[in-house]
Image (cartoon, rainbow, N blue to C red):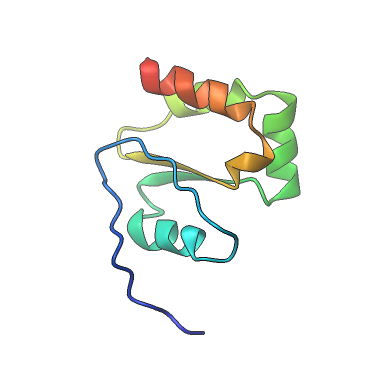
Length: 95
C-alpha cells in the first residue's frame, strides 16, 4: 500500500466538514489525524451502524452527550449517506 505525505493538516480545535472526490484519502487522513482512543468513530459504511442512525438520528445527540471527557472528537465517516444526521450534528455544535 502506498502512502503519500499530505500537505493538508486538519485543525484539531474546530468543527470541520471534509469533502472531496472518491478514493482520495479522506478517511485515511481522518484516521491519521484523530486518535481512535480519544474519538467517537461512526462509520456509515457499516450497514448496521447506518441503520441505527437512520431509524433514530437523535441517537447521536444522546451518545455524544454521554461521552466521557476523554473523548475529544466525533468523526462521522460517509455522512453523505445519511444527511438527516447533520441536523443532530448542527444541534450538537450549537449547544
